[in-house]
Image (cartoon, rainbow, N blue to C red):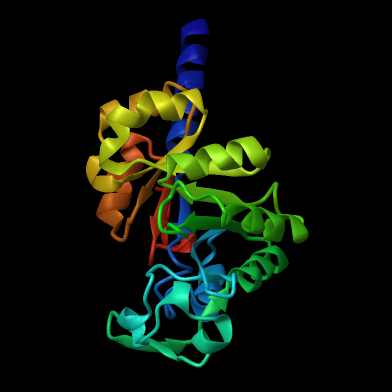
Length: 258
């Protein structure tokens, strides 16, 4: 009887562990709208993402905007963000074709993105691109912290960065703001530095193996990965133990646990 009870408890525990699903994060909002646009974030919210990634750059008039590239050419524009003002950038309409669907949209400010996340109960994931000539130039960062604090979102926001200088700045000057470090293929050489700072880590899926999982989980840290757009990749990475996946198309409602 005692052995049977232990066996039953073991089975229940195994089922509970296996039922724990990785958290899905909307990449640049979602694939349903121009990347980093209001439409992409609205559709990401409809897909059920609790966290949505937004890339951050800084305009010539010191406005934080949602943009991956330093230039708008890939989306049909002809401006450079760091040398253009927000009013100038807002004259452009961007176009992006994804899986045969063509979307149009305007540049979104980070303030509007944060408002959207707050109003819809979503966690903002601010993916910082280098906002100055060098990532050791920290002058763009205090204003971003001030913006986050003005909306009372310090305890909600997540900062994702591949810059050691940026990460250390936020750890020192903005306690309570969660920082995730993007390590990718350099995770082995950076592991000690990351673990010492107690940072969760973001690693491109190509570089994740069991050693990677054991290294960071063994230190009590979560592992995020990108970009996961197929159910096969989702299943493989979930089986390894990845905690969070950035995706364009795999909304939480599209993943079922058997």
